[in-house]
Amino acid sequence: MDSGTDAGRGGVSRRRFVGALAGTVALLTVPAPAAPLGEPEPPAGRRREPRPEAAAKTQAPTGASRPRPLYLGTYTSAEGGGTGIGLATYDPATGRITGAGTLKGVADPSYLAVHPDGRTLYAVDERADGGVTAVRLADRRILGTRSTGGAGPCHLSVHPTGRWLLSANYGSGSVAVHPIDAAGALGERTDLVTHSSPPPGPGQQGPHAHQFVTGPDAGHVLAVDLGTDTVYTYRLDPAKGTLAEVARAATRPGAGPRHLTFHPGGRYAYLANEVDNTVAVCAYAPSTGRLTVGEPQSTGTGSGTSYPAQILVTANGSYAYLANRGHNSLTRYAVEADGARLRLLDTVPVAGDFPRQIAFSPDGRLLFAANQRSGTVSVFQVDAGTGELRLAGKPFASPVAVCALPL
Image (cartoon, rainbow, N blue to C red):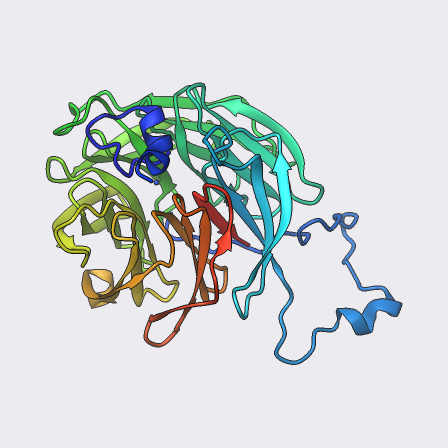
């Protein structure tokens, strides 16, 4: 859901339609799917080979690159929204996006994630009666939907083992765990925890879980709650899929934490605070799962309302990027002192309106920004040496674009 201006009212409909009324582990490298978009899966144990007569055609010319799959999240119930999960491809060299249709049958798929083996896509169903849906990518078959036990799920992630799906219910302030079977399908929920304390922060009416991710040690999972100004750490039972709280980290009152990402070194993380327009460097203790939130820092967007959305760090740990919805920009930081410090470098226009979510391509050479209000996806070339961003052509039109997942 879009909590871009939901701070202070906290309703499912408020998050979802804020864009329309005005005009959410360490960063895991996602493996390529076993089968390219729309291509059937080969029998087990067999390697897919090009047909001899097509060998010349499948051989890419020098300088060219094979298109990769791109999946797009939207709101199917919003005015002007999509009709399901958007299907597209992108050129990994140029960033050019080409539409490939829509996968229908998934309601309000506002956030997407892929299984570590690349064979199954997962989507939240961001509705009052929330759910999570699994889709087999080889033939785009929907494998089923399970209830999250809460309202307005806005984020989900897959545990690195591939055995558990973690989801965050924004509307009810709870986090859920679902088992994943060998085929990628979801089983019945194994746990559901509601954030009943501490009390809601200033201007909030209740808890609002916005993200649920795995720590770099893989034994702990962390839930970021905008409503309670808290990041909760749980130990995940690897056999039962149950949660046991082990630590809490408080931001300053009214910060409204939304999204957390880990430095690849595993000892630091970066927290985007939506309500007070700041970021914070956090120390992380892998042995205990304890997170310690540092002092708030500037987003470089001035004094106006910016609603920071998502923060990413490069695989080499050298640069971090923050999406600013109100400012319609991406902030670039240099990461220093082995991850312990962020240094503000600049902000770059996102070439769209209300960048809700950002994601790297698997090789880290491209950064995708899903712009909710303009209904576009912007693509940037990422300079490996300087971290500078360069817009890669005209943004791609996609209805109420709230998530872009490049594989």
